[in-house]
Length: 304
Image (cartoon, rainbow, N blue to C red; front, side):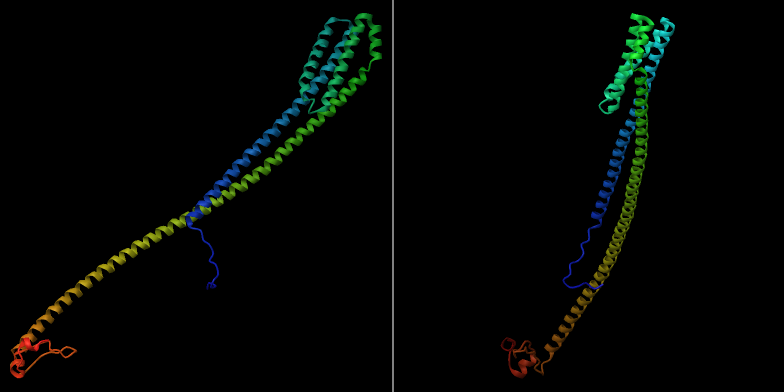
């Protein structure tokens, strides 16, 4: 592809820089996976804590209602039989109700209905105590009058209804919490799986890029070694050629000196002819005996 004159060339990061950036990105993805898993675990723990709390509230409410009913049953048995052994379950039931009320009291701020249940239970226990006190002071007629003058059945029905409603609400809240936990767990698992897959794919791409980089590096080094060997071989060959040429030039120079000496000797031996050599400006540069005999100039007079 021909480049447009004056157009900026695309920037290309070095391979090492790209590999480092890839590893940094991979570590970032792995850190995101760990963080997401931690946050999801924390959320699931919080949701899981809410489910046992709902179950605890339901158990306490059922225990409270059972205790109130047991107290009423114990008192009724005592009034019908006038046997003191019925007072034991009556007092025991009142203690159980007090314990359930004490354990539910801290939850009243978060669950306002608990305060209403506590009020109903307190009124019912107080009414039972008033009936028992009336019986002790005035016998059956006084106890009957206390029962007829109170609202025991209405209180107990209201308590049953309120406890049943709140129990159903807490049970539904627990089921909703479990559904939310399952939904969030699924979403988190999908996100973690996606991030993990992305990290694995990126690691695979980095591994492939690293292998290619190493192969290219090895190929370049091998090429450089081969070229260096070829260059050294050419240098050796050229050195041999230069040495041969130098020997040949030395031999030719020696031969030229020999020829020149032979020519000089030959020229100097000629006496019947003036043989000499002039430079470009016409000045004599050589002399022989013929110059002296023919031209009448000695060597010192003629040269230069």
